[in-house]
Image 1 (tube, rainbow over the protein chains, first blue to last red):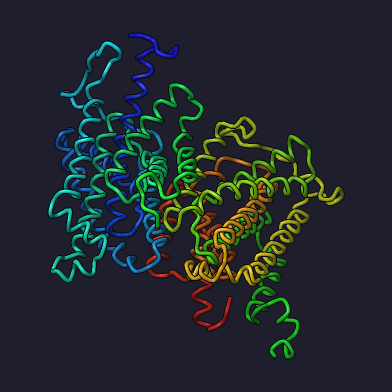
Image 2 (image 1 turned 60 degrees about the vertical axis):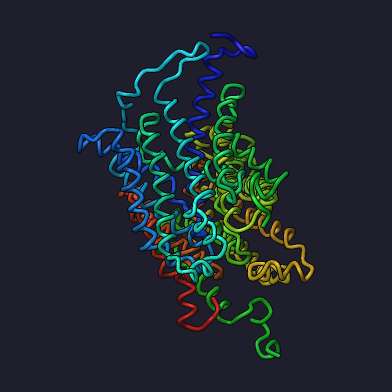
Length: 295
Length: 320
C-alpha cells in the first residue's frame, strides 16, 4: 500500500471501486431509461421502484423459497419484467398519443404506490442480503483489497451493457427497434408488430432495472427507498449523456460513478451533489448533452 | 361592445363565471373559520397559493417543473431564519423568503429552459434534489430538526400575529392578492404570449418572440409566488423543515394542480383543499398516504385529465 496526494492507495482505490459500482448501476438504469424512452416516448419514473422490486424479489426468493442468488439473478428480472409488461398493457399504452408529461405523472404515481406499499410492510430500515458463497472473500492486489463480489458486479454489468449495445446497434432485431423508434408507422407497414415490440421493450427496460436491483442487494441493504433517491441521480445522468445514444448512456453512467467516487476522496462534502453540479455545467456548455442530438 | 353593457365585470374579469366564482370563493373563505380550524385553513391556503404558482407554469406555458419544492422550502427556510435569528418583522421576513425564491428561480429557470419537454422536468427535479442536499448540510437549516419556534411577530408593528384570527386574515389577504395578480398575469399580453408558446413554440419564435425570455420570466414569477406561499407557511406553522424541500413536496403540488385541473383558474385552489383535507383524514394511516396519492395520480392521468374544475367547467359550459 502506498500514498498518493497524501491519501492512502486503499482509500483512493476503494472509493474508485465504489464509484465504479455506483457507475454500473447508473449505467444499467440509464440504459433502461434510454431504451424505454426511445420506443415509448415516456420517461419511466417507476424505474427506481422497479430496481427496488428486483432487490426485494431476490430477498423473498431467498427468505421464503430458499432460492439463492444465482437463480434470483435470472428469476427476479423475469418476474419484474412481466409486471412491467402488465403495466404497459394496463396503463401506458393509452398515453402514447398524449403529451409526454402524462407518462411521467402516471409512472410517478406508480412509483409512489410501489414504494408506499413496501414501506408500509417493511419500514424504512434495510434488510440484509448476503453475498453468495462463491463470491465471498476477496484478494489483495497490492495497492488495495478487492472484494470478489464487487469485482463481479462491475464485470457483469459491463457485460450486460455491452451485450445490450451490441443487440441494439449490430443485430437485425436491433435494426427493427431503431427503425421503429424513427418511424413506427412505416415499420408497421412492413408487417412488423410494433405494438408488441413496444410492450417487450418496456418489459426489457424494466428487467434491466430489476437486474441492477438484484446485484445491488448484497452491497446495499434491501430497503423500500433504495430506488427513490437513485432514480433522481440517474435522471441527472440521462440529462448529462442525452438519451439519443446507447453507448452514451453506458459511458456517462460509468464515468459519473467514477467522478463521484473521486469526489468522495478529495472533497467529501460535495459527493452528494457533484453529479448535479456537472449536470448544470453541461447544460451551460452543451445543452443537448454530451452524446445528445440537438432538438 | 360588451364593455358598454357590463362595464365592471369586463374591466377586471374576462368572464362573468370567473367573477361569480371568485366572489363565492371569497365568501366561503370568510365564513370558513367558523366551521374549520384556522390552522387547517391557513395550511390549505398556503398550498392553494403554491399550486396556483405551479399552475402558472404548467397550465399556461406547458412546462412541467418537478422541483417546485425547492422554491417553497427554501423560501420557508429564509423567512424562518429572518424572523427568528435576525428578528425581522413578519412582512420583511416573508419578503426575504420571496426574494430568495425569486433568485433561485432565476438560476434554476435559466438552466432548465435550455432543454425542452421531458428533460425540463428531469433538470428541475435534479436541481431541487441538489438544493435538498444543501439544506441537509447547511448549518442554518438545523438539518433534521429544522428551524423551530419561529416567532410570528407583529405585522407592521401593531397587528399581533400570535392571534389566530389576525394570522388567518393576513394569510387570506396574501392569498387573494397573489391570486388576483396571477389572474392579471395570465390575462395580460404577456400571458397571451405564454399561451402561444404552450400551443406552438416554433410558431411563437417565427412570429418574432424571444420565447426563452418569456419562459424564464414565467418561471421566475412561478418560483416567486411559490416562495410567498412557502414563507407564509413558515410563519403559520412557526417551523421550516426538510419536508418542504424534499421531492415528495414537488409531487404533492403537481397532484393538487392535476386533481383540480391543469390550466384552470380555480382548479389549483380546489385541488389543494381536496388533497390537504384528504391527508388530514389519512394522517393515522402512515405510509398508505403515498399509496393513495399514487392511485389518485394514476386515476387522474388515465380517466380524469381535466380535473375537478375542468370537468365542472365542461359540464356547465363556462370558463372557470
